Image 1 (cartoon, one colour):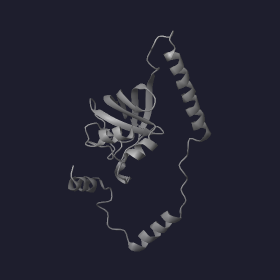
Image 2: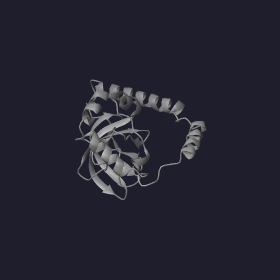
Image 3: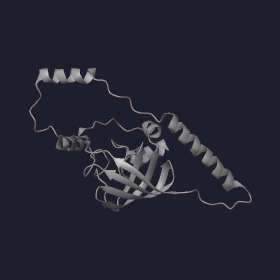
Amino acid sequence: MTDDDLRGRLRRTDPAASLPPIAPDRAARLLEEIMTTETPARPSAGRWGLAAAALVLIAGGGATWALTRPEAPVTAPAITAVENLSLAGDGATSKCAEPTAEVLAAEADFVFAGTVTAVVDGQVTLGVDRIYHGKTVQEVRVARAGDASEQMMGSGRFETGGRYLVAAAAGTVMICGYSGEASTPGLADLYEKAF
């Protein structure tokens, strides 16, 4: 995709393209309002997140001990059947920075490659092919807000039979270049560098 293709795509999705320009005095008032309004900080995992991480480490250590004892048979780790995620809605109002492996590694808590097995009533079901980071699951369900998200790499939508690379943070699919069709140039390299 060239820069001109991208600019054309952005122009087509601009919800304000048909509106007249905003008056300078109104723009100044809106900018002042934006700059003086406090926004709440992003909630952190806090003590519960640390407790959950400690439990995972303890469980992982116990599983490793149990699986590596000489008298114990070697078995596969326990697999959670389903992981539920959500997909941010209409991306036309979002602005995206260039995706980086550093941000992906720092922000994503669940990263996988999967194939869409069903798209029904606003929910996408993916069979998991590979886990890059996070818990081991067989299936992921993504609840979509709207028909597509323009920041997903590739076509911008999940399609049955398509293979996707998906990163999620706190139960929400990361868009803006971090998730999309597996064949999107550079996306697989981004995942390999991060994980």
